[in-house]
Length: 192
Image 1 (cartoon, one colour):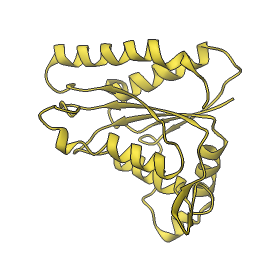
Image 2 (cartoon, helix red, strand yellow):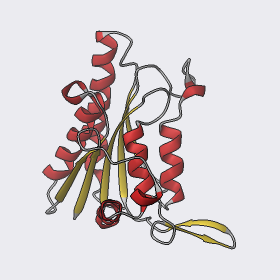
Image 3 (spheres, helix red, strand yellow):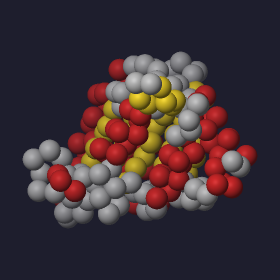
Image 4 (cartoon, one colour):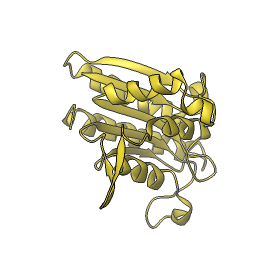
């Protein structure tokens, strides 16, 4: 089984999304099954923003093939300025490729990358969940759900730590709650 682990936070060891994505990958690897893991750190080795030349590059092809080979994809995403990091957007720009991960039909777009298990470790500084004071400004989870559905991945799993910028106690509680979710949810199935 092939697992693709993506991190995009710029905060290094202080990153909650990196802590969560590493915990998810660790749980998956501990469950056995001969998992082969590929790791891509989009902050340490960022992909260039999309240009016509970059879109057609060998690097873009390699990123797409890496995604297509994966049975499980774990994405560590921080929420910056109400959405995903630009590094992660640059990666998404490499995997949304007509004819490879989606196609257009007379009925509209059809995703071609279904059958993958995708787990997103999302870290948010404020409270953006439904009913929260800033819910209308949440554009990270909604964007990722939309993009994944567009390529055929209709049931992504989200492990969310929020309220992380509301003080040390709130940060600990947010991360601890998300880690508990990792312990209980992640091992349930290895692939869709």
